[in-house]
Image 1: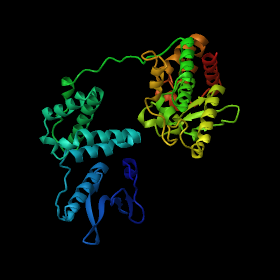
Image 2 (image 1 turned 180 degrees about the vertical axis):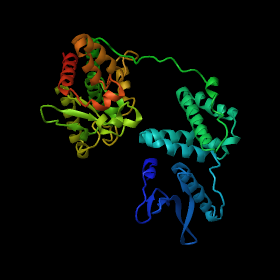
Image 3 (image 1 turned 90 degrees about the vertical axis):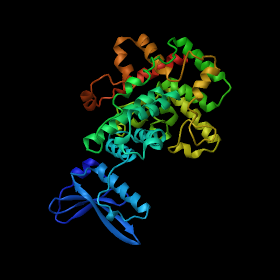
Image 4 (image 1 turned 90 degrees about the horizontal axis):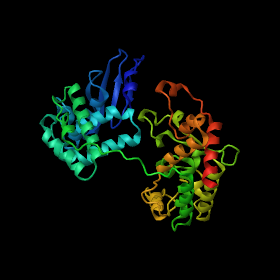
Length: 401
């Protein structure tokens, strides 16, 4: 699959050559340096070729839209070569163009989420419409319907994406207005941000862990809860944790390498291993992993030792439920007092008081709070793992005292 950067870098060679995208679309590069978009397809059993346009006059997203429009004609039994001008004349086509243009800057999960939002909330109502025929009143109705189901933050994001799509279309002369530009004034305001419920007294943290151990629930959920407490990472990272992310489990310096894709990072960093978060594992955390191994071995889930999930549900194939640990805390008598994400606040508050100001930077780094500018973060590869290991070992001592 091509990217704008690859297309831009396509240089002429002694012989003409092709750079293939998807579904028959390719860039033809002539020895003269001329570049053109072409579509290979079959018509009445024979391979045919359609020239869509020249690059850079026609950028990659528009070429893809021309391809999709041509294939739509084929699906209707129409030879696309007979269409003088195949236009991006629907909101859905324009939105997909915009999405293809933006996707290289996003994580795979985010790109999928954005497209699903369009497909679920917008395309059924306005996908087949011409962009300039869509009014602000119609868009407001769609966005307010998202608000009505209790998703106010999602509604605001959809409004922003709508405006981005129309702005993109205006820049390419595919539409003449942005009817979503002023919708924000008619939407509900952002809800007040409330901090996650968290225990900030170490004795209460110990009491919670003890109550969880005595609760009637899955042993794997109990182990995941304790591991979450000991590592102070985000719940999603623990649920997605796999055995091949653990390094040196049998050695003197075991380590959990949390993939950047599971971290709350700028999207452009999510595929870069240089931004993986390294969590030194205390002996107490290693003991939790050993206990999880024993459960998997007893249930014959051998594959989970070779890259599979660490904290599995009852089927030993999928992760524990997203709300399982939260429910455990409620059942243990801590409803409203502590939530899974609260361990990060507990970790920071208690350790800063216990270790003092000199350890603040190490504590922040242990939570993956870089505490530095973008330029410095890009060049500073010093992980200070030994100092961070001492932080996690002290935290385990406090919780297990």
